[in-house]
Length: 292
Image (cartoon, rainbow, N blue to C red; front, side):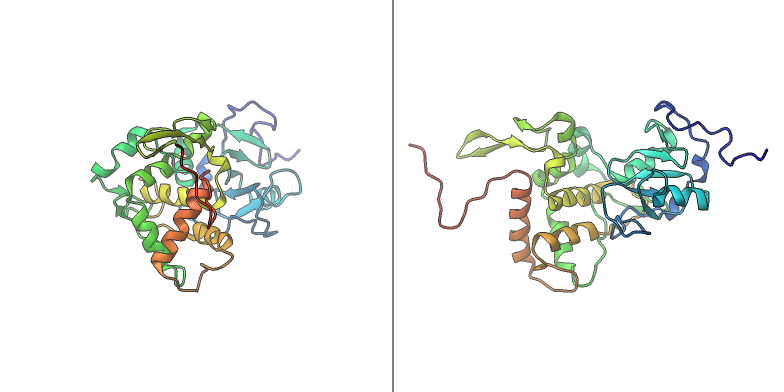
């Protein structure tokens, strides 16, 4: 009787604290979470259920039998995957989840979904400590280059400027924490806002959960978190996901290969971020009535 390559591996359905014997096969230099499209390399499907192979870096759909990810694991002997949306780690084809508490996976989780706590955000402007990427290159978080994707320099310039407007930056760095706190009217985490001050008064607003943000607002948040992260695998950042979200939201008014005026784009982007995070829209020709 021949032994299976998975002999000794835990069976599918084991508890969430299942140890994975294949973590030493992970190849970090092959991982690029800034890739232009988080789509399956086989079917070109861009569904929410896309997994990155942590051995070769390619993206595949699903993890059940006969899915591209499952087939890739069987045919190539690449067994460790991460779900690109929720950041869970899986061993295929056995089909069990690897605990996020696994210390050796922490750097990958932070590279995929950078996350900040209020205390970290409060100390960003005073930080002068250089970080190192996976290849030993030094960089200062918040002061990193953005790739030019053919005449997207105006977008890069606007994002670089907004990334240093502290109230806006802090809000989007802390935005993923809103899901943990829950939506509803009230105050956001420190630095995020959640109450708006108008004419010296506080006005309660509904705080959207991060999952309710528009695709453009979520992409902007992720880009800023990548720019300020000290856990980058690369010292430069690819803004492709934001560029795609901007193109879709503007009906290709702002698109790769098409130059635009930075000031005009700044006004458009700020409006889209306002609306995309739950802000109200005042239509042209209509004014809000003043309370007596």
